[in-house]
Image (cartoon, rainbow, N blue to C red; front, top):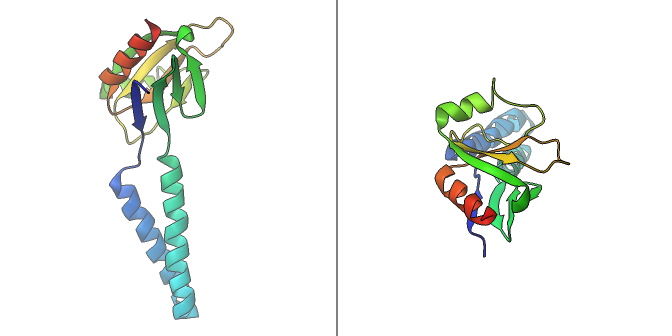
Length: 147
């Protein structure tokens, strides 16, 4: 059973934009008739919804002695200090303090994050930056997994 699990879902406003994309597609196809307009409405909204859902399907889990963040699986033995970042620190670490070699599971609509040192000498990744809505809980789970 995971000690921490979070899905980085897209905000509600993105779903409204997906619906409006369907309306825009319908309006573009309106001169061609009713049936193409309905196809544009349904097709445009469906494609936009698939994009929003795919982007918002990233998960962060701490389970079985490992951190699983998106496609990355990092064993707890390779993790160093985990630090919760407030909105200002998170902004700094994803802009001017960022390292190009870092693993970043970044979602711009989530203001807080966790920065986890990677201590594996064979891995050139210095740290993992993980956007999260509950940074303190994630840090506690990572600390427990390491200990």
